[in-house]
Amino acid sequence: MKLTIIFLLLAINIICYPKKIPRNYIQITNENYEHYQNEGTLKMIHFKRPHCKPCEWAESEFKKLSLAKPEIKFGVVDCAKQKALCQDFKITNYPTVYYCGSERKTKYLGNYDQYSLQQYLESIMHGKLINEIGKKELQNIKELLSNNQTNIVVIVPKETEIEQAAKEIPSYSKFLQIAQKHQGIIKFWVINEQNLPKIGKAKESYNPLSGLTYSKNLLGGLLLLSIRDPDFEAQQMWLQKEIDELQIKAIEDWVLINSLPLMVEYSFKSFHRITLPNKLILLSIVDPNSPKTAPFVQQTKQISVKENRLVFAMVDGISLSVYIKRFGIKQKDLPSVVIVDYENQIHYLLKNSDNSPNEIIEFIDGVFNQEIQPNKHEANILKTLYLAFKQLFIIMKQHAIIASLFFSFIALLLFVYSRFSNQIDGTSLENNEKINKENGKENQKRAEKKLTKGKKNENENENEQEKEKDTRKEK
Image (cartoon, rainbow, N blue to C red; front, side):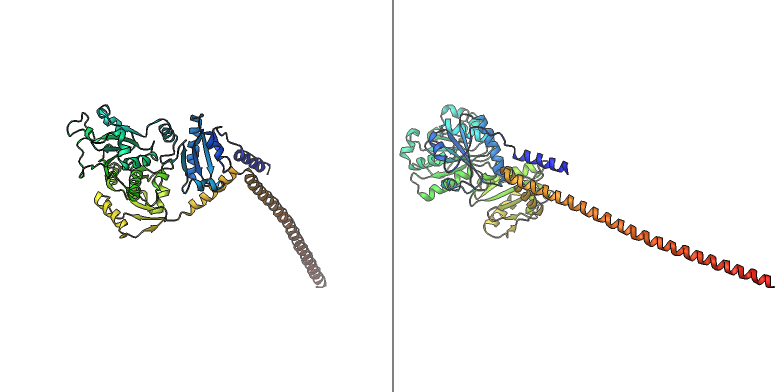
C-alpha cells in the first residue's frame, strides 16, 4: 500500500510540475490583447483549443520559434476561454496562426514546423512582396524558380511600366492585395511581356517563361503563371484590366490552391492546409518501400496540375495503417485512391482499379457528377477509448487540482479495495476455522462411535466365548 501511495505522489508531481515557458511566449486574453498589440512587439498569435492534437504539435514548434527569436513576442490564445477574441479574428479551424503587422493582420497559410514559420516571419518582415525578373534574373531563372515553394509570375503588357502597373491596371492592384495574404508562402515575381525569352534563346535547358503561348492578347490585362514544381507544366490564368467581386473570389481560390504543392504530405504540420473550405481531398495512400509508389505518385501529380477542384495529398499507408482502416483499406491494397469529405465524414473509394491516370480522372468526375455513392468512415472503438483517456490526461496536465483529485480518488479506491479484500480474507479465515472445528467435532463423534461400537463388539465376543466355555464344562 505504501508503494502505491508513493507512486501516485510521484505521478502527480510529474504531471503538475510546471514546464519552462519562454518569456516572450505570452498567454493572450481578451483583456491584455490591446496592450500587447499597441506595444508593437507582438508579431505572431497561435489560436488553439483543448484536446486538439495538431494544436499541441503546433504549440511545441511555436515555442521553439520563440526561443530562436527572443526579440519578438509570440502569443497563444485558448479559444475555449477567450471566445470574444477568437470571434474577432473569425477563427473556425484549429490550429490557426496570424501575423500581426503594424498595418495589417495576415492569416498564416503555411506548414506549422519551426523552419517554415521562421522563413515566413523573416520574409514578411524583411522581404519584398513581389520581385522583378530582369535580364540578370533570366540568366539564373532555373535556380530562382526551383526553391521548393510555389512561384507565381505576373506578366504585364508591353506598354506598361512595372513601376506604374498598380496604378494603370486595377486588376494588378487587386492581385497584390491577394498576394499579401500568401507572402512568405508563395514567391511572387513580375516581368514585362516584352522581356519574355523567345524559344531557343534561354541559356538554361529549363525555362517556363521561354516560348509561352496563350490564346488571348493581354489587352491591358495580366497573365498569371503558377509554377508549383519545375518538373511539371505551369498553370495559367488570364485577368482582364477591370475585375469584379466574383472574379476576385476566383483569383483568391486559384492562388490558394496553387499555394500548395502538387501533392501535400499528410501530417500534423500540413493537415490544416489540405482541409480547405468546400474542397474535397484526394488521398494517394502508398507504401513508401514499394516500387509501384514512384510512378503512381508521378502520374497523380500530373493529374493535380490541371485539377483545381481537389486538394491532392499523399499518405504513408504503413506508418498510418490505423488511420487508413477507417476507409476499409489494408496494406495489401496499396497504392489506393480515396476522395475524402472531412466536413461530412464520408469518403469515396476507387475500387477494383489498376490506378491508371484515365481511371483516376473518371473516378474524380464520377464523384463530382454524383455517380458514385459515398461511404461513412468506419468507427474505431479502440481509438475512441484511447482518445478519451488521452483527453483526460491532457485535462489533468492543464489543471493540477483535477489531477490531484483524480489520483486521490484512485488511491481511495485502492485503499478501500485493500481493506475490503483483507476483510474478506479475515472472514474467510474465521469461516475456515469454524468449518474445521465443526469437522473436528464430527470426526471426534465418529471416532467415539467407532470406539463404542468396537468395545460393544469386544464385550459380545467375550460373552460368547464365556458361554462356549460354560457349555463345554457342562458337557
